[in-house]
Length: 329
Image (tube, rainbow, N blue to C red; front, side, top):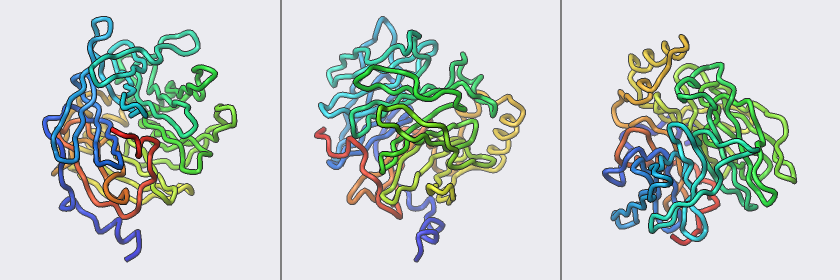
């Protein structure tokens, strides 16, 4: 059976579930040891161990504010970075497992970071951070013409804006070659990439793929063949995108009437939180991220905005191991 046939063969019956009573597990990380970590809206990180037991690492309030983690990153010492999606301000915070939270990055180029979406470490010790929009409230950025998102790089020379003018910048990831930084532009409906220069600067933007009706690209990771896997909120779609831009739809779980309602609002420039906070589907709960894990990196773990568990499913290709894959947890 060809890979394309395998992609078309998977259905919702393949899905199983891990974890329980999670709150907005938007971002999910997997390690070689079988541990799973998810962002948790109570203010920290939920840890699902291989035996099914769970721990919750909640950040102590910072200046009286409870952190609202969207993207998370696991560090080598077992601590975490949290991208804070606050109502008014953002920033990146470091969370120890005893609940101690300290600022990691609160401003860039002299200005406070707006509500922050995602953070990831790369293989040379740089950190890439996305801010989806400068607009407040953020829902004003749920527009096709949104173009005020940006990417921050933090390295030995400090933090700086590496790319600007993005259409609701969401998850980003360094390609397995190390040559490119890919990013999802959710409400501009495209996957873009930038060539990474030796000094950490980014070259001009290249659009890898543009998506059609019902696809709002959010989560992003790579397989061992260098293809990007994209999760779409609202439509619960999972797509594979080759470096050439060729797209394969692998999985979808949506109700046509619900999707049409969201699409109508999006086209009218009226999309808002209610369109993200409701889900009408058979199984999935507004999937927002994907992590390859399990034996041989052949299991997919799906983060989501509305569920209390993590969906798991067999993958037709091996995942590319993330930087934290062999970190001791």
